[in-house]
Length: 397
Image (tube, rainbow, N blue to C red):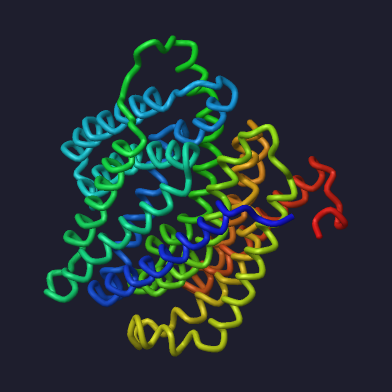
């Protein structure tokens, strides 16, 4: 089955995002240096875990309720997201005042912004993913220009880069709310609907939290068990692997919207997997041949040890392609519990493996643990999806 025009537009937008994301990593790595980049990566990973917990997964339930209720509920979801953001700032501020944690202000503010961003972004994906993808490319460009100005003026440090990161998210939120006419409102909504959203969101939150643990626990454990230097080296591999996964991300976002329709074809997911894997093979071969030159040229010779880390992580990305494309189908069809079980198995494997291999192999050990967890996750999703939909090898080709 051929992919529709919407999928190819999404791919083109993601390619633009890959270019800007790459330049962003160049300016951050060169501007901050290995040690401070390690601190930056640690903060961002902590935020990525926290915002999922405090958003309670309600953003990802929008597709489920739009599909089942058949009515426009975006204003309700924005209102819930805004209330979460305000509560995070209030209670986070109290926590900072009492405990005075390391990087407390940055983590609280970025988490509060991220909660509203993810809810608004998910609404945009379901309503019209193409517009959202174009906007993402534009906002990334603005963020990249801001980092370039910091780098060229030699004012790049941990605080200014984090400030630039937060402002880009605020701009994204404002533009999406204006474009999609989102107005926070609880008018005409009964308590039963809100209750149902949070009940559904709880399972979705567990799925997302387990996903985030798979993506973030390696960096967090590496920082706690080694040093900022090893975390900084590892962060380059993680950044490049994340860019590697932006193509299946493009399919994921369109599939999230398409899978809410009754005429959704399972073969579309199979086609998306095949295209993503083909692109992945090409990227892996290219990086294997020219990766050392690439890292030395753009990040500097100090980051050359990240070549091995990146190669290891790229191997795990093949399995993550399966997860990236299939997970939104599970969520939009209300199969969050099944997805949570698969992710729990993967997360446990990741944590246990990191505990044993990081002390011996540092950043390379963290990469090996991640590949193990990614493989478990991808295979569980694929085998279950094929079984549920009774898709055999003849149907996939």
